[in-house]
Length: 249
Length: 178
Picture 1: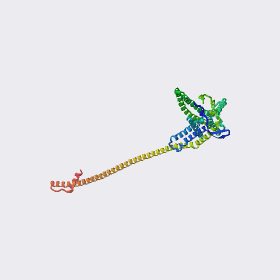
Picture 2: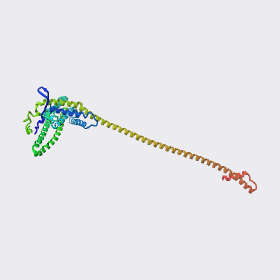
Picture 3: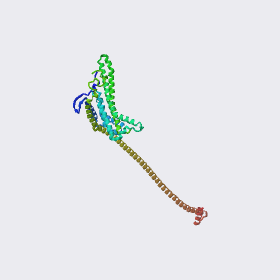
Picture 4: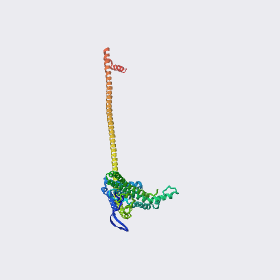
């Protein structure tokens, strides 16, 4: 049975250079990021080149993804949230394509590495903080002081609000990372059972049917998780951005 | 690799650390993520999203324009219909007026003809009456002469000699008056 951790290994193709003590290399992770970028670029640019009044299938996909993200932002962060449309759109499309690519056999899942999800979550976090202070100044801190709270429990509530705000990038990034990691490990383990039992003679073939069915079902589940986690990441981004836009509770 | 690898703690029996926590690869991943994500962001913000937005907007404009055009045409046809109905009503009332005028004119003509005929008949009647009166007077005058002649002849036959003409005439007049 194959090592379920093996699929997460970063394989170095060639070294590009060094940034201080750190080695910068072109890896399988970078390759799949590039593929994801190419897919998004092809999807968004090629079918829309005609600017057809009546869209074809691929142009419909491009338009649907546009309208889907736009309506998500409008519903959770209001019309002012549309200034972050390119950010949310890039995040959603990148995570979605990278997640789906990871489901292909032999493919590498970029989002199964915590450094990637942390970087994306911190990008959102700092966008919220910097834009919040830039737009509202110190009034942005009212975010931590909910109105209508009795004064004697206000310090406690404020402390909780600050803690929950600061822990956002952690939950934001770990949710995506852990889902992708756990899903791929589970898939690999059950698929491993199939080959292991299949190698154990005629009785094993019958025994392998159960994990095989489970692998098929899990693949469908992982497809759902891949899409859902991209959506969850995007909608959480919208909700956090909403705090930067409207800090008053 | 061992078949029980999934039961081991991450990074346990594995060569080197658990890959997602292997800090040696962080720098490369971060650099590539930054490059790709910035490129993706620029692509989305500068090219892709404005293009899709313009497509959607032009479609919305086109639909709104078509609806407005349809509305305009409908208003136009409504106006044309109203104009047509108005001219139809005008024509109908004009025809009515003409018919009325014609009928009145004919009535008046007939009336006039009738009056003229009546007048001429009345005139003829009056003339005839006058003629009758004159003729009657003339006849009456003749009656007196004849009566006087006859009375004279009768008297002459009875008494043998003609009476005096004046006396006979006076006597006839006396009778005629009575």
